[in-house]
Image (tube, rainbow, N blue to C red; front, side, top):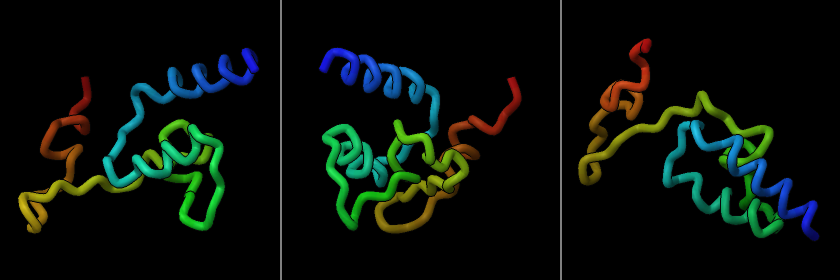
Length: 79
């Protein structure tokens, strides 16, 4: 059990800098709980090996698109 917990902690620690959207929260929670069902998509779980970091994260103002998160927040800028 302790080894399993260590692995989960390592998965979470390894995902700290990944881009994330609230749309993916349910997939993360299902993954953490070890639940696999037809609604779970491993490519949308922040801690999953198959997490898609290139998936667009659009911002909405109300119900209207306001742009892309990376462009607006500035993650695309080189440091």
